[in-house]
Length: 148
Length: 281
Image (cartoon, rainbow over all chains, first blue to last red; front, side, top):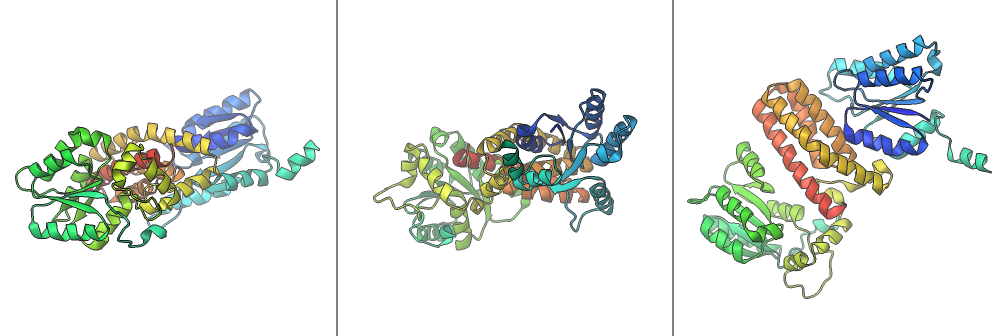
């Protein structure tokens, strides 16, 4: 599994990197613009990402615009929408009383466009179980089945 | 929680210096501290406080910042410089008659650990002891005359052992359980995250203060949001709460208030690092 972590916060990146490295190559981008570049470069090299962990609020370019850019890159390479990279929205945003309606809308829209949504701080167990649900990593019994 | 019990022997022989010019306040604070088993010395002014501090090792100092003559700040500065203090981890609590946020901010910025407003109640005393000094209720070591000295000789092994038994959420600074849940008890990953945190947070705090100074409140909000996110991962409870408050207050655009919160965040960060030294790294 090849992964791209998109997050402007260092500790979050280290956390996801630590969890994902055992499963394959992991690249990082610190904002949406870098993410689009990384995806385009990977597509050009015919080594696309299987998974993108995308933060929402980031400087330069936020998650929602980054995702638009990424899907455009994939379109250009004639990759059907369902075969593109799986995207998990990773954000600390949780609607509360003081949550502005704009941010609320952005979050709702993004959730619909992503394959999964997980709230920070992410729990390793919950995250791995989501990867299994998305069939990005095998379940335990599947591994033993293959091994035997 | 076990250590919430008001055991009069909880802080037996813990030496505390009360620097206070008002004789009534002196008596009140001293008698309350004695209820928890503490050994209390009194100093009515900065000079005698310094004298006491140089000759005795104190676990905690209650410092009246409104002292006549050499005030609490100066006295604290001198204490901070003494050789004694470089080896001993004395906890400094500023006491003041008024609840000005400014006093609080100043005392924290000066490097004191905490701040209380007079009149000081038994509850406040207990809270400060519980928050800052490992209680002895969980140990059953006989004949330890001065646990603080003992700890020091053992390079604070004692409090570390005790603290790890106590619920880590008790201090409100570091929630180890929260972090361990995130990393699913992967201590190597936890250490890596803590190292990253310690390396990156100082710059972020600098940027945050600069943003507030420049009146860029939107940026301050985003920076606080980021610090909040990082704090949540590593179980930095106090930092997470303060960053959250700052994030939410940013829209009100009150510079003084935001700067005070940023300083509080710095203070939380210092505490967190100390807590890690004792607890994990």
